[in-house]
Image 1 (cartoon, rainbow, N blue to C red):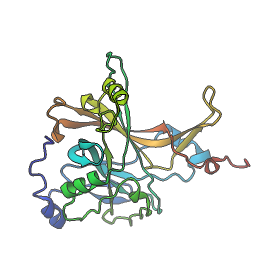
Image 2: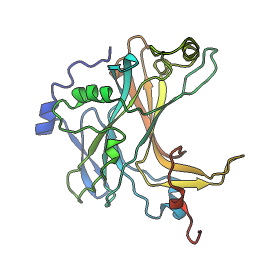
Image 3: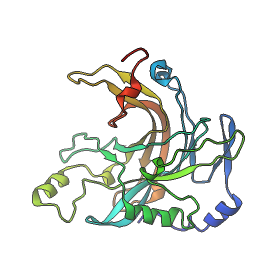
Length: 281
């Protein structure tokens, strides 16, 4: 069960009339519409923003989201699976045109292995066309928002909003399935290994990290035996708790806790020539 009863009945009224919307103020743009099930996060200052070597012209995007939700989807090669997804919107109040190249990671905080030892798990956003179609039918049946995935949302720059105008958000969705669940084609060794690993459904405390909402970077010297510097991107952390058990999971049992802006190590190739210090070849 995914706890999805009748919340879509009111969608046409919300789209056409703006019923139930409130507005949050942000910078020079005071009109960011926020629906009854949506949360709005504006950029906040972090001490590492002050690294003028890399952040002289730093930009930030505003972020709006709904709590993570669940959908049952028949995924090719994997059968019917529970897909975890995050509906979100980005709003560009930076005053300049920017490209949003997102990096979504879902990290569990309370996972344990088969011996009861702590073993946090990291799940990377996956492109799941069948899941995106199913989610679009649920979240945007009239095609009003034109929901994008983590690749298509970066194909066009996010246009800046005009001062004091109603925000023009761009809508996207991040999707995850549990890679530790057994697939039909797994061999015996793979099945045995997966059975010993923590499962996402067992976790009740986790965070979603979103990088790409800011151009903020922090670069430090190599750590240990590493030969490359450590690059950290300004990242939004959203913390959640899920109540209930894994056998009867429902959307409304996932509760938002808090958000933080931090600098987090990045695995992406950020094109190091962009990071050279002034006067450095």
